[in-house]
Image (cartoon, rainbow, N blue to C red; front, side, top):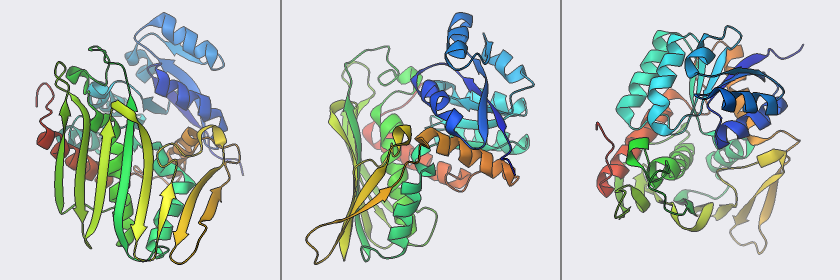
Amino acid sequence: MAEPILNWGIMTTGSIARKFATDLPSSRTGRLAAVGSRNTATADSFAQEFGGVRAHGSYEALLADPGVQAVYVATPHHLHSEWAMRTAEAGKHILCEKPLALNRAEAERMIAAARRHRVFLMEAFMYRCHPQTAALAALIRGGAIGELRLIRAAFSGVLKYDPEHRMFKRELGGGAILDLGCYAVSFARLIAGAAAGQPFAEPVEFRATGRLHHEARSDEYASAVAKFPGDIVAELSCGSTVVNDISAQLHGTKGRITIPTPFFPGLGGRDERIFLHRGGTVAPEKIVFPGGGVPLYAHEADAVGDALARSEREASCMSHADTLGNMAVLDDWRAQVGVTYPGE
């Protein structure tokens, strides 16, 4: 029996929207039907690039398209809340780029709107939908490295300062914590939860520091230490003006796991691998996850399609409760570093 096909609309035409559109044809469950932009020429160009799909010169027109069933909201952070809620009001399902909102309070309102209008909503942490991530959680649950003791997760890169760039501008929800630190927090909560046999865990202690850009007053780089139930400690870091480090390691009483690509596994459908170092062995065990031509964002689209086929309004790989927990930690991290957004 053929998979049901979900007709997607993409809101905006930026780089992340282009990645989703590029991978969507490899999805089992979805196809691109339309794109919406605030500029008609940009929408037309994007539509032609991806097979001549319908182009809309406004977000409102995209939401009014009767042929669109689900919308990938890929706007800048500060617009997520408004347009996800308007998408819910239009009766269309929602995959919203991470972070779901600027803070937990916004996220709560978005989830309430999705539930009120009985539509699907998921925060687009694409790595959570990849087989590598599920396998990592299973290894920890199964005691592959004994009792989990330490999680290390980092996401940083170097950007040239531009006061109008979304990474630096507070009015756009700028800062490394919200844009990059969200991955490290999400990963640590997932793995600490797996150690306890739960979908995720919340820290019982959280201490953080960081540096604010002298002009923008958004965070350039920051670090945090979280303690989870079971005395599991997580070292988290992020940065937008420091040398690239996108990595993760898990340390236990009987071994460790090195994850070279924790947050972008399987880009372009490539094979992925992790390394399991067991105590007493010289060489690590390499565990390979064959890409099979299924790229990362296709896995994410199928997580939505599969949940909807089961008549579910949230996905187990990134549930509403998981999103709210993540937003609460990010709120705390920003507060300790001294980052606020207009209106907070």
